[in-house]
Amino acid sequence: MSNCGCSMEPVAYFQRPNGEYVIVHHCHGCDFERFNRIAADDDFDRVLSLPAQPPRTSREVKAMQAENWLAEHLEEWDDDMEEVG
Image (cartoon, rainbow, N blue to C red; front, side, top):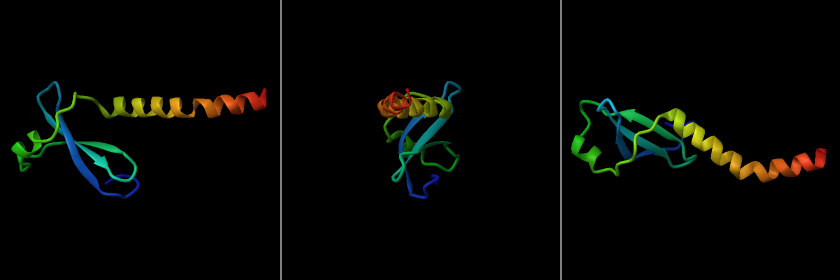
């Protein structure tokens, strides 16, 4: 479950360099992504029916989200700095 409490849906998978398969779950409310390793009782054919994505870590995703947020809010920050200066 995501922090906002909305439901999450499996949207993709990727394979880590060590061969481990990971399912990407996406929150319908806040766009949060969670990575879960597949379990022994997961339907592997169903996992492979999801779109494949390049492997990544949660750290990389958080850094990308921070960069996107900064890019979106840079203009607001610039305006605030002009008012101060």
